[in-house]
Image 1 (cartoon, one colour):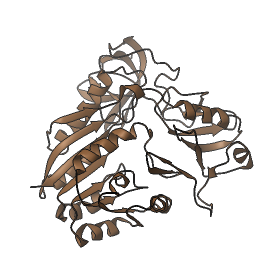
Image 2 (cartoon, helix red, strand yellow; image 1 turned 180 degrees about the vertical axis):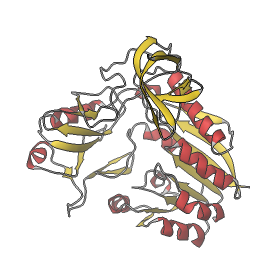
Image 3 (cartoon, one colour; image 1 turned 30 degrees about the vertical axis):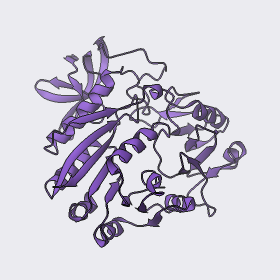
Image 4 (spheres, one colour; image 1 turned 90 degrees about the vertical axis):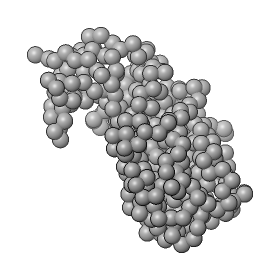
Length: 383
């Protein structure tokens, strides 16, 4: 017999939360207020997981999405979650992580650009099975054939249309310039058919410099990290600019191609460090600031080697644990910590606030509408 439950909320990772005989049960695809009958309840890592077998009473926060994927593809798991509730729950997830993991309860600022809740993505990875192209179905390697995606910018959907003429098994990342339509292609397994369709195909074994273009003065590199939306990336630029202010010397760690620090390079001394050679090479081509290859040991030396007005960092989803002690001991006047993962952010902020730093502004940015992901920019100053 299936269990009937009401979904109480959503948690970090985007899953619905219910209680089954007093135990927490995560339910992918379910929304706060849904009443569902659960199927396939299993225990993994001492946590219950269930699937929605029947949606008996839908949440008032559901809407009719403009896409038949309707939360069945990994790229748009919240496409059925209406605003403003979606934004409110993203903020709730950040507050919960900061309080539960970090012991912190700051005021939270929220920023979004409602014009780009749809059609905002300028970068996406599409998967091919030899016949079709699309996104994987959740928890599988089954390709869901897509002619277009409601979250993708029109230029990215145009590039997907071109990609569909290629019969290929594998994954291809497409990045488009929403201004002039330039397309960067990144694949681990290039072939002649792909090159017939796209002139700028890049792969890990190539000896020539990777393809790139400039958007808002920032180089975007094939195969390198860039935000999923170059248009919504402007919200991130604005938030970082407010925190860094008029700093005259800036150290940018995990700098990539200079996304956070190049806007300051005309008026400040900027040094950026990252492990990715292609990204650093692209940043160097701009001709502003000092950008160098370096790992976490180089980050630590830079933090303690000279005083900085401001330190920027945008670490990977796993956070900045390897350099936390050096961050805590650096003599910077302020710090701007950018994170795409509220849990690892809370862990790192706990360490910093226990070792001489005060948490100031916390700005949440909706850079990934209709997904559970959210970007956070935090201001830290010495106590």
